[in-house]
Image (cartoon, rainbow, N blue to C red; front, side, top):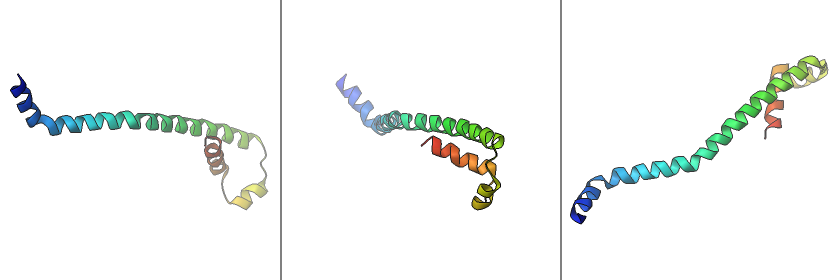
Length: 84
């Protein structure tokens, strides 16, 4: 019994080790991916809210002229600021 297991381990140790490493790496990275998903959702929703607010309010031509950005670009910046 021991000899068969040793022979199997000798033939498959690289695959088993690599598979174990990949599983542990995926468990380690999974929360980071989940957090990035949540952040992207937050940015998208915050950008929509800011776009509606900027379109509804008169943010002033001076702000648009000073920055050289469109209302859509300002809404993107606001969305990123809200979700940091």
